Length: 75
Image 1 (cartoon, helix red, strand yellow):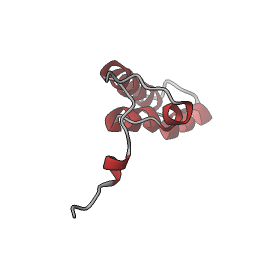
Image 2 (cartoon, rainbow, N blue to C red):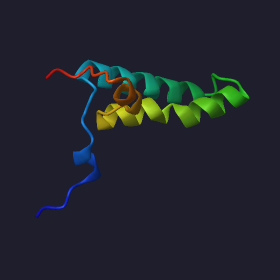
Image 3 (cartoon, rainbow, N blue to C red):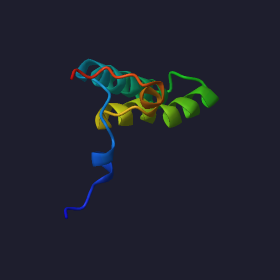
């Protein structure tokens, strides 16, 4: 029996365009925060939360989509 990776248990639910948009927007948000274009607390919040779309885009799975039963991935 082969070991199962945690990624094998997730069903990818993000299409290529959705993934690209998430990664792009997350990267832009990080640049804005790191460049100092956002004020204090907003910059901290963006630095923390901009990783969410980047990670979901890289992994190809969105927990909110799973809860809603939505998928942007072609079958």
